[in-house]
Image (cartoon, rainbow over all chains, first blue to last red; front, side, top):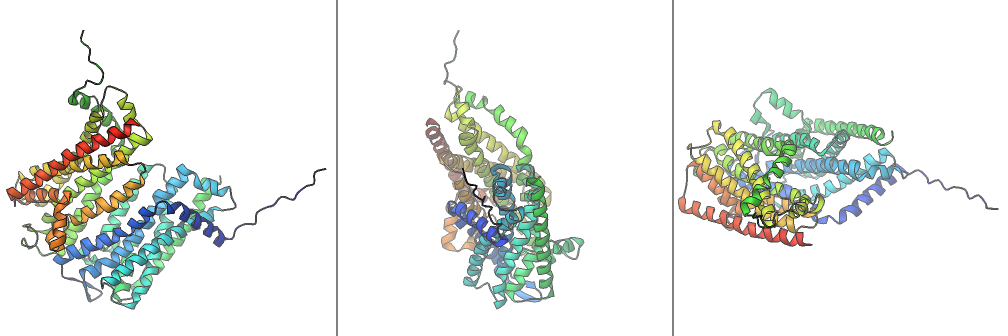
Length: 268
Length: 268
């Protein structure tokens, strides 16, 4: 007589453990693409040298919250913020779309004890780890070039991670609605104006006192850019708190939507 | 009755047999390129040329003879844009035609030769570059950034030449590449630094004497220089002859490099 062996039911993973497994998976896959990883760091540095220093020679200083800031020191924190933004955007749109639609990676993962919430959290955590390595390296470049004027700048790293979190969550949510690569045009169409008009290369005063200025001030990347700039120049105001709350709320909302959308896409 | 032996097509016949293929492809895919071809560069003109330019002294001595930063940046941006289109059209599509769709193998099974494939492909890229730059220049004409009526036409020819040279050089690279990972590196270590440091955004004199000479050695600078001299009517004919010779030389080198690369790759 065969004896009945009790079936082993795997214990459900805790969210932390699940996120760790997913991050490890991404790390293993990414190791083979280390060249892309290394060169990704160069992008903001090149912009800083080109626009901040090359164009900076044509410009005197800019006024920021009543203080005169040299052009390179004005552009550098914006590059910190926009590189967190660009990185989060790439990771959570193109990569997620590919995994969702072509690789069917998430379907495979759901055949394991992982849940859709784990997937959302794990993917975003990985993006944040990758992004913070870039941000930390860029901050060191800023320090080395003498573009950091205050100890508040230590908080610029968590600020960059917060920007990445907010955009990762929202963009991953948007990606779940995409049908084909052509839809990515819409991403580019939103990404370019955000990158160029969020007081990145010139102060928001360039828009005068028009409605346009209000619109710009209400966009998430502008909040991120100004937050980083306030921290590296040491002019921290109440506006900084507004930016932080704004970005946290945006990220949490995104995360909730991602989870619900993945449930709908993969579990029904 | 004299029938033509297979493989005995003249270059023109070979090319003429191919144009309808790429035209058909274009008819079905042109929407995908619209944002990148037209919207992105216009955002750059607005952000950098108009808004940032508002903060820059219009001193012709410091802007290579331009009377405003907008007039300075436009010819450079269009030349850089020609390069970007040429490179991106000659990367993934070439690898696709070799590795994924195997279009080139199919085409080679007809009387077409490798030379014809290269000619037709690059002709299509030139068409893309020429039309995008023409639209771009036309849109900018009312902003008063051109000094003469004939200059922009010659500048456009220079931009098309930039596109041709970069298309051929990139084609040769793509034909030899085994994995698409190499494209990410090409964009970050090739296209981006060239865009930022080849005099499109600021006079290369701002780079300091050593880097200024490095910039002079880059192919894009020759295109930017030609494009700007014609648009601003500050033509230095001996310099223009050098710029032209460099670009034409690169086209010739690039053509042989592409044909040899594809020849070797398709042999396997």
